Length: 217
Image (cartoon, rainbow, N blue to C red; front, side, top):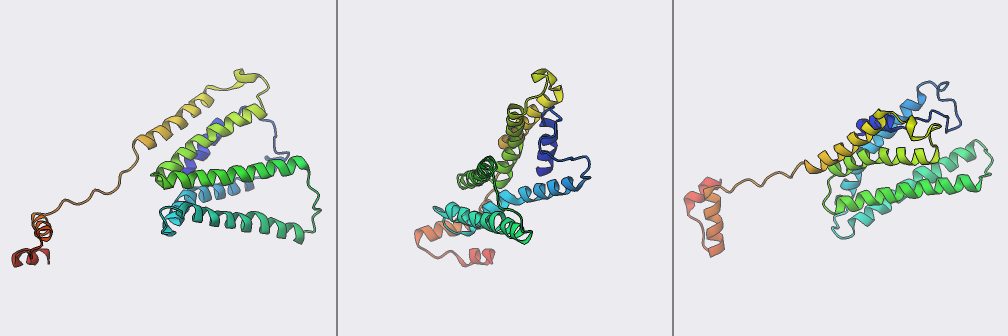
């Protein structure tokens, strides 16, 4: 599913080919693709790790909050200490603009709220396969719409190709199909006649006959 998300992201990308990042992507080779695939792999196991952490807390009521606490600890380690150490090691100037700090903080907040939303979804009956599939199907749509608003195509909506609308339709359809056809838990095996009789004897407070005990053994 993360790979599908990447394909949808390419399909849903706005038709504006202008350079928004300020870097020459053509001259950078395929290094960017390697980092993108790293993100795909990390996001691919993100929901599963969150779900395992929540269940591992062994606290049905507050497990999600305890798990989110360690998500924040990981953010602090990876997103605060690591870049700070790199900047200090490179002796880089610490001058930062208000705009850069604002949008960077906004991005971190969006990521944290998104992670908490996933935890809430998993804690209220959602499964990693379904929840993350919906996230991966819907996020490219939101990204494409926001990108069009902030960087509209030069010729307006008329510049959008039919593949753009097809991508939105396929992403929405994929999320709906996964939700409607989510895998169910393993069915409880039916009781054998011997098991049913033993349970009835146990309910009555009597010991089951010896031949039933042999069957169970």
